[in-house]
Amino acid sequence: MHLDWRPVALDDGPPISTSVTAAETQRLQELGKDADVLEIGSAFGYSAVAFGLVGARVTAVDAREWVPLDTFLGALDAYGVRAQVHAVAQSSQSALPMLVDEGRAFDLIFIDGDHTAPVVESDVIWSLKLLREGGTLAIHDFNEPCCCPDVGPTVFRLLGEPDEIVNTMAVYYRNKIVGEQRPEVFVPSVTGRIEPKVPTGFWGTVQPDEHP
Ligand SMILES: C[S@@+](CC[C@H](N)C(=O)[O-])C[C@H]1O[C@@H](n2cnc3c(N)ncnc32)[C@H](O)[C@@H]1O
Image (cartoon, rainbow, N blue to C red; front, top):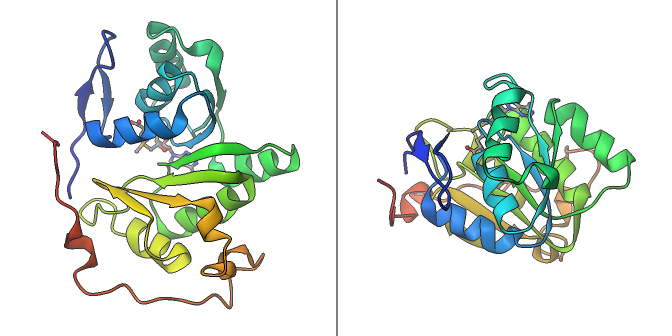
């Protein structure tokens, strides 16, 4: 499923550019309601605002390579959610180990940052250290082989089949990941993991339900 960037308004606020779909937004808001959320990749602020509007407390990590911090903060102000969002203007590779050192833990982690294989792998491994028991990991562009071909195969190799797929977004429940099915992802060194093969036709299983 290919996603285009387009301006999207949440509630009655101003449009914010994003590629996140309406169905993905709805599921993220269900999972993030009144929760502690870690977002990796904020861009113009769409997903951070979506979380803020449902009462989430958001830690928003973004290397700020694409969109200036002030633009992001302006979107938070426009929606009245700035007080709920802590912006961390760093790469996830430096920010996530720092959050682990600080003893932070989250109910929901939304990965939507650098989409290359090494960074996706790092984001997944560190996110698993930051997820609370019963928490949820949501990974955008898992099923976006056109623009983000590394994401799906990398995540599948680490975590296997998602528990849910919403458009391009894979959702994994932490308690299933730490069960006996996937103990290999908690090995500190990533070597020696089981490497399941991606089944033929795997990427064609999701149909867009609402994407314009
Ligand atoms: C796809 S956009 C995020 C979209 C956003 N979630 C939304 O709702 O529209 C990806 C963002 O990840 C950021 N990024 C890229 N590499 C990163 C890294 N290594 N660590 C953290 N953020 C990164 C970019 O600066 C960009 O703003």
